[in-house]
Image (cartoon, helix red, strand yellow):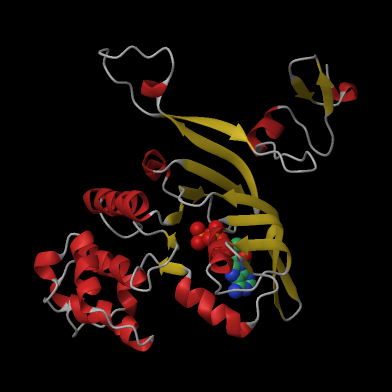
Length: 291
Ligand SMILES: Nc1ncnc2c1ncn2[C@@H]1O[C@H](COP(=O)(O)OP(=O)(O)OP(=O)(O)O)[C@@H](O)[C@H]1O
């Protein structure tokens, strides 16, 4: 569904240039529910804004389904945003209208695109667990409930892909769990591809795959493995917890990122020795620095 190869985004302001993405690679399968994790400033929101058609990439390639987001015209971008993507922000509720009901808020974007469908708007609010509150004015709902209204709105155009930037950033753990459960249901039942950007590692258990971004590049991946599905798991024995296996991302030309902590521990600065023993690749400080 999503393919980014060597994606670059440079922000230019006056005489300053910030390279927010510096050749990022990412592949997301259709129907996948995954998270992008990274420290502040690593480029997560930049990536999400490009995928959502809110920002233009500088170079590289990026496509979502049939759309090439580097070559897309402004006119096509409007229909891409309307038909393909749903967007959820941390403080989405700020964009909602407090004196309209939850239902009217969901219907509003439908009216803008001349596709008002009250039955579907009600169904969406039912999906996010707000069936009994749909006629309440927005200001009568809690922050977590308002965030669920925002999720319903993001689905009003029946998107194929949902992009969520820190969707659980300003809610408590219970509401966060509830929101992640809603995402999982939407993913399973409607087959929507979901990409969540967060710095909250605890969300990792709720998605199939986590990709870590460091300095504008994908660095490592955590893939969920259910030990209960392993060949040697005996039915009847107590179920084990889901675990994530961590992999370092190797790009098409063989580059990988070595964590800063490892480099510091080994005092590797600008070069390292690399040996291949037939099974493993061993990276160590340059021989002349040892001893
Ligand atoms: N509009 C902009 N103009 C200039 N620089 C920008 C702009 N937007 C982002 N940046 C810079 O690009 C880099 C990546 O920012 P980005 O917002 O994508 O990071 P992030 O991982 O989402 O961080 P956070 O978790 O704090 O939101 C940062 O150095 C940021 O200062």
